[in-house]
Amino acid sequence: MNEYTIIKLSVAELETLIKKTIEKSLSNVNSKSTPNEIYPNFMDTEGAMNYLGVSKSTIYKMTMNREVPFYKPTGKRNYFRRNELDEWLLKHRVKSLDEIEQEAADYLLKKEL
Image (cartoon, rainbow, N blue to C red):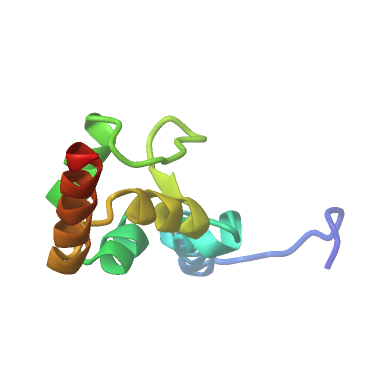
């Protein structure tokens, strides 16, 4: 069938054809592509919250306060790069007690000299 083919349809057949066309269009609109399909090197908010092990509200607070690096290409959804989240995590390392004690001992030795 091409654009010049004339088809005779009953009203019921035409209604059915219109409904199917609308349903197909709506399913295409409603079916979301995953962020990895759109931006393969990025994760969305849900991916970041799973990766960091925090809640959605915590991720939103972190982005609102600009505590964590993120991207907002469409102005709506937030996207995160795994390597940047890794770098961010590494910046927030907490020293062990052994390291703190060693620093204290080094400080005292320097002070005595």
